[in-house]
Image (cartoon, rainbow, N blue to C red):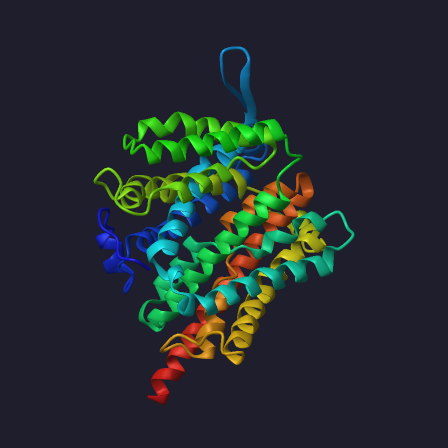
Length: 403
């Protein structure tokens, strides 16, 4: 990952070596905050049955004047509104990596890209094999996502047992996975498209590009077009969080108005996204009632089983097999210091699918099926993290013994 100036999480870097990169350090710590948000959601939903649902499903009408307004539940203001900031940060990181990071070198990125594709396709196939033709078929993309914060957090906590190049491999894979998830959400999880609103969104993108060409450097000039772009995409049927990705990708990667814009924006926005918005998203979406009946129903459901197996087996096998094919065909090679046992462990850790998986689950289901999907995400992510950590730990011990 590219070096970053500005915001430094020095204590995180010391506590979770050898990550020194700002983006990665924030993601590593935010995994713990994200976990706290998920646990808080479960405690709230089970300690005050009904209060959780009542609060997050309360509707708020936001608009200007009496005409233009949007009425959404608090949960969906978080999911469709605040999560746009999360996707904006994702767009910034993709832009940075493509221009001058890991994704700019075809030879370096070839194997992680292949692995990421395998790690998206096979989980979707595992899920579809159990749900094809049924009511749960729409959730095929849920187990295809990797949660960067949790994956980085697990690797960071394992410390020197994880080869540095394995961490870079998993990070690159996760970024490519995010690109795939964005495409899937835009293409498969948007509603019927209203062309007039879509043309309006395209015009606003053109306006933002024009402002950049005119060298307008003040951030306030872009705020109103960004908000209207979000509204146009919402009204068009395209999921409005895609506005965040578009804005991130439009951000200049080179000095603009004597400023490094991406670094400046990440310095300001990334901590808010990681430490407030994403944990709030977990709090709003991870709360389900867990008792004997709900657990029994969930694990009788092909939705739950498909997601859990997709994350645990589909991710591990998909990433490993795709990487093996890439090496066999000489499209890439394993990073220095990374053996196949290490890669299998990293592939298992990539099966921690939480934030984007919950996001896609909310786009796919309501009611009991959504609860079953959340149960599958929680179970599959926990097992994936445990298995990945165990495989990497055993691999590290064997490496030390052989030396």
